[in-house]
Length: 240
Image (cartoon, rainbow, N blue to C red; front, side, top):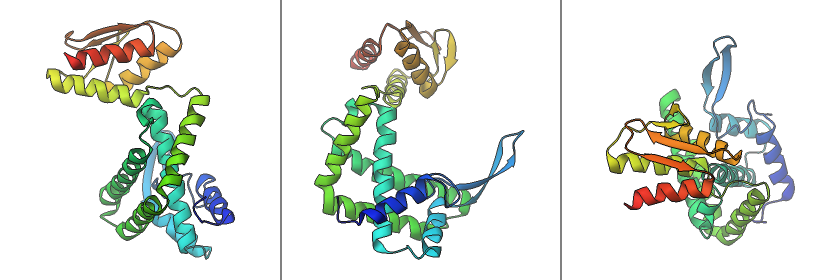
């Protein structure tokens, strides 16, 4: 697809997805250990991207092709994750922007993990991974854009919503900002923050239930019978 041996791509995909380095999606997620099942407490033990590099190195697989394969895995996985959250419509005709946004999102996520839990450790590995992603996009942008289109088709076939809860949550937060109101909403009587309110509303609408969303101060009120109507009414409020 992009000049990488298929056996290398498959090896890295299996390594990351099966938890063979200690955790599913290691490299993007922190390596943790359960401290208490009862209290659901976990301790952050190691930066995931560093664990991935150590794992590849121990297996003699820390060459350029393997690093590019890891970068490819996380880049396309990010597109799929964000599409499921934001909806397929946001990505139509914007494959390049989706890939660029994912590189920025992954870079910011890993750096935040490094500084928050490990005092800035692993920044070298993060830089290597992100640089590999940028090189992939620079050298194989057209192919990767077709991959984004394919991911969108696959998500549509699985009935991923055109407008996802992540997009609705962003719009609700923007309504709050513009109106200068507290960002809490009642969804059919249950008080929730924007992200939870968006998920709850879309879940009910997909079940065919009517939704009433009301801001905590009562200044915003939306009733809808389907997700398209819900989205349209939010956009109407933003346009006022």
